[in-house]
Structures are given as C-alpha cells and as structure tokens.
Image (cartoon, rainbow, N blue to C red; front, side):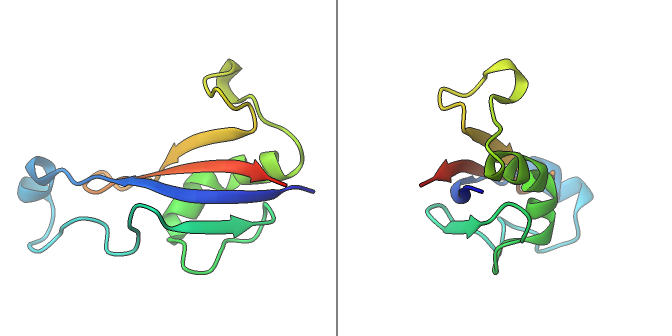
Length: 101
C-alpha cells in the first residue's frame, strides 16, 4: 500500500456567482489555503481536510494507494497523480494528489 500526499494548490472564488445565489458573507474557502499538505493511506480522510473535498477525491486516493493511476487515459504527466477540485461552485479548491515513497 502506498502513501498518498494531498497538496492544496489553488483556492478560487467566484463573486459573480456568489452574489446572486449565495447568502451574504460567502467568500473564499475558510478551510483550505494554498500550500497545505495532507497524507492518507487511501481510505482514511486526513484530519483537517474538508469533508466535501474528501468526497471528491477519495476514490482517486484509494486507487493511487493500491498502485493504480493513469486516470482518464493519461491526462497527468505523472501517472501516479491526479488533479482534483472540490465541488463547491462558489469557492472551489484545487488539489494535487500523488503517491509518495
């Protein structure tokens, strides 16, 4: 079983979507910031990682931990990695997940 590293690369925010649809005060992600790093064994959500972000990436983490990869016919340069974003439409966060030794 391989260890999987999860790195926060970018936190986006779309005020043009938030203003007409979100409640007042919604801003950028309050949980994550670029540069944060988490580790998982593939099936356990790392402490501090957003639940919704984990739901978006847990299948990729499990696959990588078990030695799989090459998602979507090789769209990643590193076959043992994936670029995943959480499903928050107002403030999506982009994560790089990759196996580590």
